[in-house]
Image 1 (cartoon, one colour):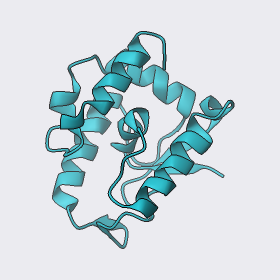
Image 2 (tube, one colour):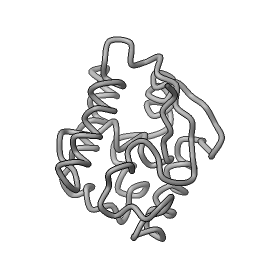
Image 3 (cartoon, helix red, strand yellow):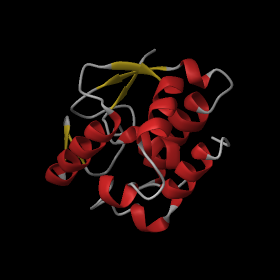
Image 4 (tube, one colour):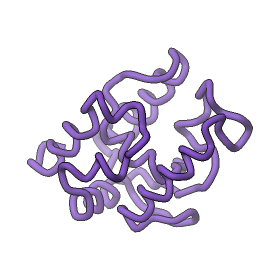
Length: 138
């Protein structure tokens, strides 16, 4: 089954370390990221880029139908991530190709700009994961 991702969820999935907005959200994100993307065949997982709610958003307490209670912030994040990664709604990409694209197009330190306004940024999880990816560990 193809995964549906908003543009900013590519980098969120890279940095996921078991934290989330609620227990249900965290369990779902763990199933997507650790159960599928980081699984042995995870690089082959096909992802369709979408503009609305996706596989990660499903149990989010901020979800409002296909949107979000913080839609303006989410739209800014999606636009910034889409520009950085060269992704638009309707695109399809494997997780392995997404990782290669992140490595090629997003350098350590870029997240302060790309993810500006994200409450998770200050934890440093995504920056650490990006550093590991660039070091060949991700």
